Length: 83
Image (cartoon, one colour):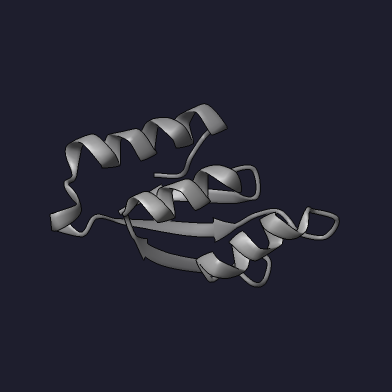
């Protein structure tokens, strides 16, 4: 289910936190939909740390507080899909 808006992305992230405990190893699929050209160095570093290095790249990550924080910081550059 693709994310329709930033508000929907935040809803999905909070839903993952409340419904799925970290012990069940919930996963998110992240897809880079906007370029990091012209973005601050911290956003570029966050995208690189998430494993997103090229446009339309997709990665699956396990949900934990650190990942959710990174996703929240670059939510305008990525598309989040709950698995």
